[in-house]
Image 1 (cartoon, each protein chain N blue to C red):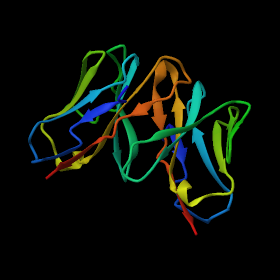
Image 2 (spheres, chains in turn purple, cyan):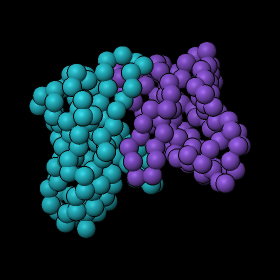
Image 3 (cartoon, each protein chain N blue to C red):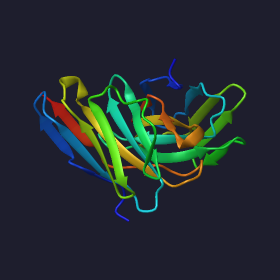
Amino acid sequence: RKEVEQDPGPFNVPEGATVAFNCTYSNSASQSFFWYRQDCRKEPKLLMSVYSSGNEDGRFTAQLNRASQYISLLIRDSKLSDSATYLCVVNNQGGKLIFGQGTELSVKP
Amino acid sequence: DAGVIQSPRHEVTEMGQEVTLRCKPISGHDYLFWYRQTMMRGLELLIYFNNNVPIDDSGMPEDRFSAKMPNASFSTLKIQPSEPRDSAVYFCASRAQGPNTEAFFGQGTRLTVV
């Protein structure tokens, strides 16, 4: 079993749609969590950190459920520019950063 | 700061040749990571360093792969001998101490072994 698992998609949605991505992790001692975004043929970049209380950044909302070892990302009012691959990231003991395989999102006009 | 710098950006080599990828992390960052990305396997962690010391190399595929960090501002990933299945994009990333710090990636090296 992979340490971090995501639905690879692709998710094809119209502009303005709300879309949710899910991620599960296997190490219950994981310390911190992130969502990264990767555009085609580019390097991954931090989208947002994920906090236990849940956090929001504009149209983006991240949630963490430690009991279920589950992380989510919600994108509201999706834009064409949101088209990218979204990577779930877990920070384990010792600073080890593990990436999920990524979920591809395509927003269509 | 110029960010994480990787070289070369592209490398095409023949099977059996030695390949060396280079990385300069962001100054002051304590962690350095080497990842490999392919369509099939996604972004795989190969090895990471803390304060120039290798902490976990369990992701290194086999003995043909080796990584070094002789000082805080430089790391190399070497493949010897290279094989076609090593073709991938290799990313280097660095981050500061602390569980919530952001990892910054270099632009990657696209390796093709023919």
